Length: 217
Image (cartoon, rainbow, N blue to C red; front, side):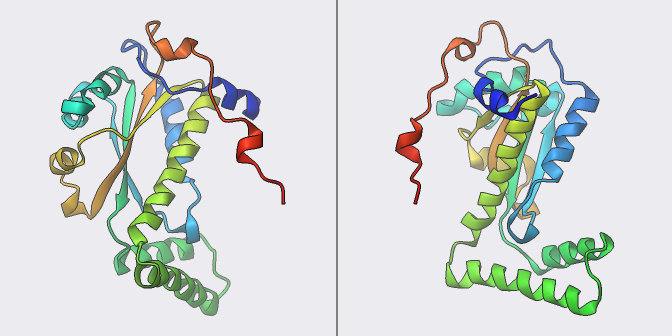
C-alpha cells in the first residue's frame, strides 16, 4: 500500500466493533514493528502492557473514569489495547543490558568499539540528566516515536487505532504496580476495527496548510 495514501486515509477511531478481532499473526507483526522502533542512542527506554482479553481491558479501563470515562468504550471494545510505558530513569542495569545485547548482536569488532559505545551512551544519559536536567522528557520522547511508528504500521495493515492520553495515571500505575517496576505510563493505544457508528470515519481530515508549517531555508 502506498504510504502517502495510508497517511491520508488513517484517522483516530472513536468507536470500535467489539466483534472483530485482529489475527494473531497480524498483531505479532505489529509487536515486531514496535520492537524495532528507533530511539536516540538506541536507548529503548520502554515497556509495553498488552490487553487482549476482557479481564485485561477492564483492568486498563479502571483508569478511564471521571473526565476520562468517554475513553473507556474504546478500550473495552477494542481488539487489543497497548499501554506504552517509559522508564522513570535510565539505570546502570539498563545500560549494561543494552550493551550486552549490542554485543550479542555482533555490533562490536573489538573491545575498544564496545567501550566506545558504552562511553558514548553513558555520556548522553549524563548530559540529559545533569546538564539539561530533563532526562524524563528525553526518554519519554523516544516512547512517542514508538507510538507514531505503530500508528503508521497499523494503517498499512488495515487496522484502526486510537492513541489515548486521557487516563488517570495514578490509577493505572497502582493497578499495574508501575512504580515498583520503575515505569511511568505514557500513552494508551487501542487497536481493532471501526464500528459503523464511528462518526469520525466520515469526517474529512483536517491539517494545517503546508505554507504554514514548512519553511525552506
